[in-house]
Length: 78
Image 1: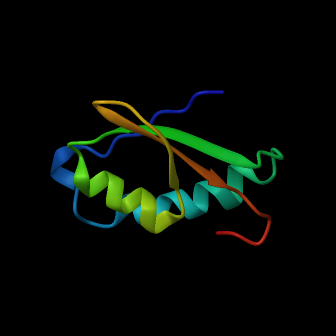
Image 2 (image 1 turned 90 degrees about the vertical axis):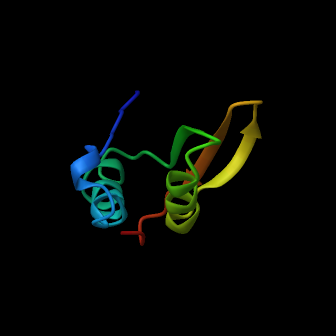
């Protein structure tokens, strides 16, 4: 399953993603039994990389242009 999410530029910097991701995990992914979340982020997008690290993602793989990041999901998260 692939799910994409972007925050429109005029709404960035309002902590929307940092609040939405835990809710998405708790209300959608955990009930579906999903135990891992993966994403790719461009290396030049340092703000997003920092956000994902703060949410619990770790860098699993690196290319010249992006990071592949993963987060293990546990029922007590969110």
